[in-house]
Image 1 (cartoon, one colour):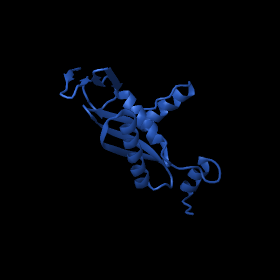
Image 2: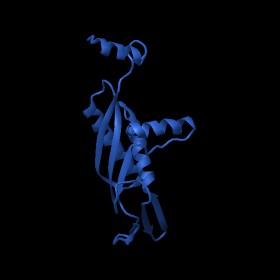
Image 3: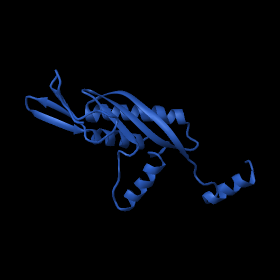
Image 4: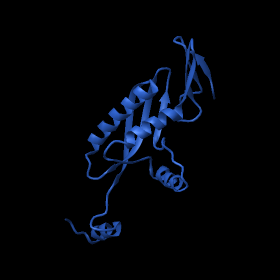
Length: 161
């Protein structure tokens, strides 16, 4: 259900902020013209900033990463994958789902992602970031001494190193 609201400061928001990144925009109207920023743009900025943080292996859940691999194979990419934004008049809240590289300290990665996303969205989009919620849903474990099958074999045999 789309709606348009004229704000006191000249900002117009079209659509509804439902926590998804489709169909909503933020518009700034000035004496010299208007600027429209779609929520998907905000999500992409946040996604790019998060991916640049050391220790972040990927964004999105398992299904999103599977579809992302297919998109990558055909030469397309979803930079907003694993990112949901809720954009208001002058503020934005960001929800991220990430995969962290093992053995990177997860809390340190989350703190760095939060700082990078806040900085990028504030500087590039011009919106105040009220919160960055991070869900770590997986850990990327690189294969030890060869393939992942070697690691699975160690686990099945119960060997501890």
